[in-house]
View 1 (cartoon, one colour):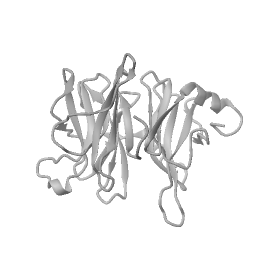
View 2 (cartoon, helix red, strand yellow):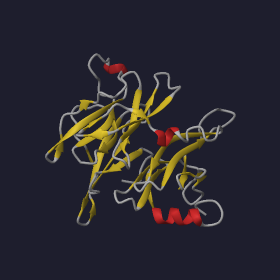
View 3 (cartoon, helix red, strand yellow):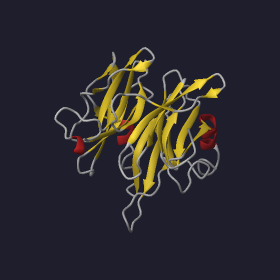
Amino acid sequence: VSGGEADLFRGQFAEDGEAFYFFRKLTPDREDYRILVTRRLREGWGPAQQLDLGGDSSDFYPTVAPDGRALVFSSYRPVPGDDPETANANLWVAPREGDRWGRPQLLAISTLENYDAGPRFDARGDLVWISVSPDWSRRFPRRAAWRDGGPSEPVPNAVVERWRDFDPDLYVWDGIEDPLRRFVILGVSSTDPETGWKRPSDLWIVPRDGDGWAEPRDLGPVINTEEDETFMLFTPDGGQLLFCRGFRTYLAVPVAEILAALDAPGPAGK
């Protein structure tokens, strides 16, 4: 799926690793996205195809439930009473129906007045996402246990909340725990002091230290560049960390190499 214009956004594997769902931006100057899927074939990965979820709404951030029976995603499709011209991003779910996805339904846990985006199922099998206030001044990392095909009442996502303010000069976008819960990968940006703009995102690691956590560490120049490194995820077996560079290319690095680098002298990644 890599290559081409800078329009490649976050992906997630299906529960069995046989399909990879991701989304692209179709229109550069507005929030116009579509979800695509590529499937594993005998000779490799097949061509990406747009997912048919009904209608022609902007759909993004796909993630498949651990039992494979539901596809959760963010969408601008209007909810009852919405003005289509000012529709907000909410969380939707499509049930598995044979070899396709059924009609999407609005998830009741979505906060209609907020921008709810970035849903994914984490190492615990919980649904996590970010809810942003209408004025974009506050971000609320959320978590909801997913049981019997649906979510429980959401609570703050401690994986992100714990590190959100670890350094006043840095901004933490997101955090993801590895499947064996040995470390957390953070997406982190510094802020330009003159403009206030967030610089491109880098990946940091927070290893477990006994019953607690070590200090967050920059993964270093092997991973991080002047472009954005973002949209991190793990392969279903937990063996590789994937991330997107520059909104164009997905790259993979073996988790064993990351852990080996943590034990080496000098900064992580060198």
